[in-house]
Length: 406
Image (cartoon, rainbow, N blue to C red; front, side):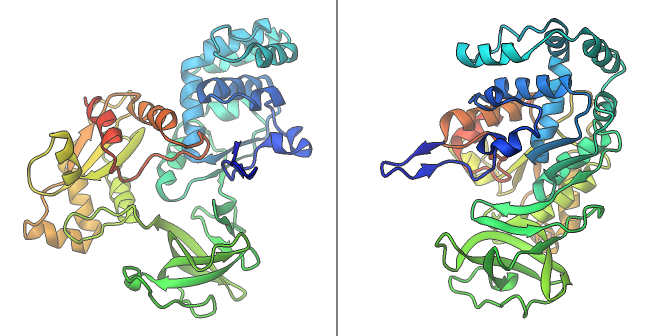
């Protein structure tokens, strides 16, 4: 968080426990831990104080990818974390200020009994570890829609051991968009909030127009897909922020939607405009043959020309970071076949040879972590707001991936 020259606060729109003394007592991480500004150290402290508390009831983060990354880090760091809990001494290698270190150290007391419990459970492996180290864990609160669906599925298949995921809110920098009133549903329906902002809807077939006609909330149809337009109390007037949703139902007279993708995340080398939704469905189909990857991003092959890496006909390039124990990943053509099944338009361009087969490139373990670190160091972005770019177009970011190919 920082301030403009005129004194206006600038920073992420996400809430933090430290913003509210009432909320702070509900969280396992104490206030000094929330003042750490570097992500690896902050995550370590979150894990440390979370593990100290056997009565933890909720895991919460903006996005499912953040919770998944936390469990991956826990796999790597658990011996040191258990040692800290056993001795009551904070890891000396953490790069944090002496002031924050002192405050955290004052809150740590040796707890050999809890350390022994944790060591026993970690020794059994990490399948279902969440419920084993936190037997009172009720729910994981996080967004697992759109591009985060993959991480939600990975959490369910590995770490959570039956703990449900609830995605309660559909929100953005521009404000609250919707609320999920159906926590037990596997899909994520969001009731749009008419008192949060004023809605207009652009039929998706008209979304390429500069000034398309719009519909009001009482004019949309169930099953139809729309780009959202918002007018909010902060001064955005008829603002096209890019989200595309499908109306799946009505609650009273108010639309209930599912989030599909954001405009601008399209792959488009020949005018085919393949959306993130199509790409995600193709990936989900592919992952019935492959293990779900740790990370994924895509780009259009013309963007590789700048790097000197790609010279052939236009096509999609899909970067995947496989799980560390994945040995057989199957045919690289499988992704292209599933893309063709999901998109008639893409299939037609492939059929007539206007687009070459999609290329899958595997990157080394830890590459997507490096990509995140690169963005945090070189661009004005907050760790808890950062999302893996679904479509890469920056040469510097593409180079991070190319430098770490398997």
